[in-house]
Length: 144
Image (tube, rainbow, N blue to C red; front, side, top):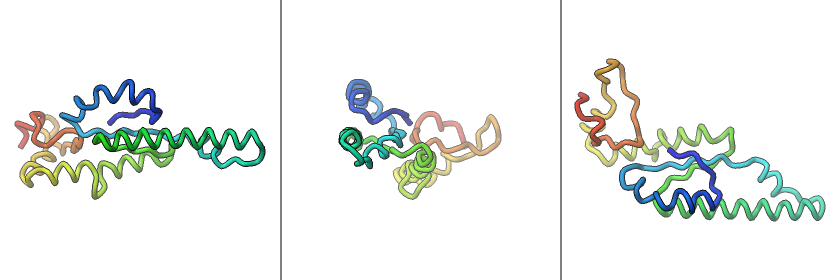
C-alpha cells in the first residue's frame, strides 16, 4: 500500500517511472485522502471570488480524477476518500468480496490459501493474511 496524493506531479515524476517494477511483484493500492476543502470550494457560487475558487477546485478534482484513472489503467487500485471514509474504504479494498485477499485466493489453489492463513511457528497463533504478498511467495514456505 502506498499513501500518496493524486496530484499529477508526484505521480508522474515519482511513481510512474518505478511502477512497472512494483507491479511485477506486488499488487499495489494507492490510498489518497481527498481534501474536504476542495468540495466546499467547488460548491461556492456567492460572488465572483467564490466562482473563481469553485472553478479552481473543479479543475483540481478533474486533474486528480485523471491521475487516478491513469494509475487504474496501469494496474494500480486507487482508493481516494475523505479523512473519515478512507479507513473503511481501505478495509473494503482488502477484505471485501472483490478485495485483494479474495483475489489472491481466487488465483491460487485452496490448499495454498489454507497454507497462507496458517499458524505461525514463532507465535503458534494465526498469521494475519498479507494481501500484498502472493500466497505462493517464498515468505510462506516452511509454514504448515
